Length: 89
Image 1 (tube, one colour):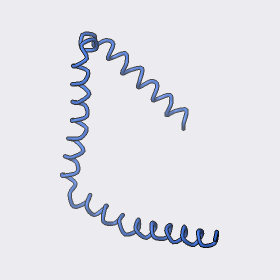
Image 2 (tube, helix red, strand yellow; image 1 turned 120 degrees about the vertical axis):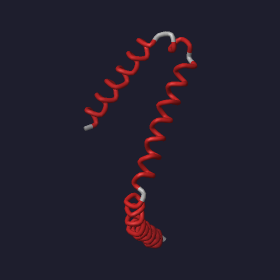
Image 3 (cartoon, one colour; image 1 turned 45 degrees about the horizontal axis):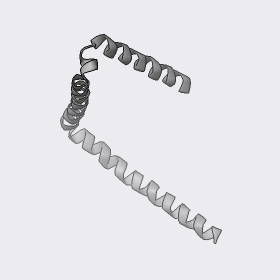
């Protein structure tokens, strides 16, 4: 019974590897064919994210009235994530 499970799992792994090998060239060629489109989509996504965060902060009146608190929170988050990144290597 366990031998059958091993064969099935090996077959699934082989299929996934074959799919990866087939998809990677297509993905690369799409990025090469439409670099401006993808650049614009990424730019829109980043801008929309920042605009959404800004609107959320503006809706919270306590934070909207205290920009120094937002600055301190932002710096603390950057320091925390930077030290976590450094610690994780």
